[in-house]
Length: 251
Image (cartoon, rainbow, N blue to C red; front, side, top):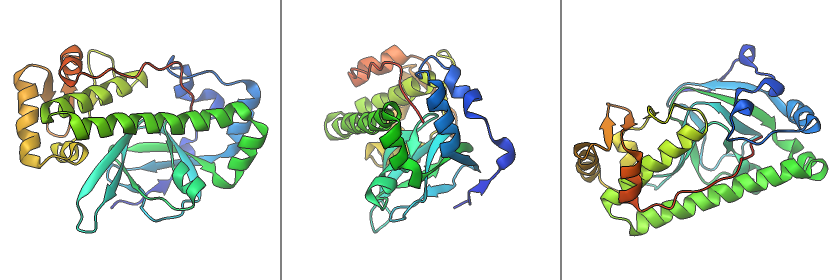
């Protein structure tokens, strides 16, 4: 795996964070901005393929994705992998290790990333003195649980075609919300192997399933990326009652 490295020159002031101008995120008050600015210790830059957090480790920091994509996964002793979820700008990484003391999953960069780094030992201060931010952290954890419920339903009960349509529609909707492309052009940076590890299918079955979506004119597959051509068609196949979110928080 690639190594993560620090690049302090890229530090973005919290009050000038590019995510704050997106309508998807809630506004912060002046005192919240001041605390988050002091809570943040710097930024990290990671290349695609970097192992950000490893299962079993005790992480000393929390991270928020500022730009790029990553994914969370677990592995069996023989190396088989299950992708649990995908991490996009505004998402919090490492909370489980901070609260529970040890991570039971790994996180890998899917594309080049910039992450904001926060001091784990100041999380109690956030909960004691900034109830609105404490609610935000709780909201983010609850939202993750909700997404995992949807993923479990998909893997457990949807057909292979429905699973693939759901996954691509899910990633498309999340990408559009955080400014990773216009609705008419979103390139999802996933490989067929990653799709297989997310859906619990063999790579052969995954390839056949994705080709069906391509032949129906719903997606275009471009090597290591997928372009959505018909989101309504994907939603219809998946029978997915997509999440309707209010303005969401981030740290």
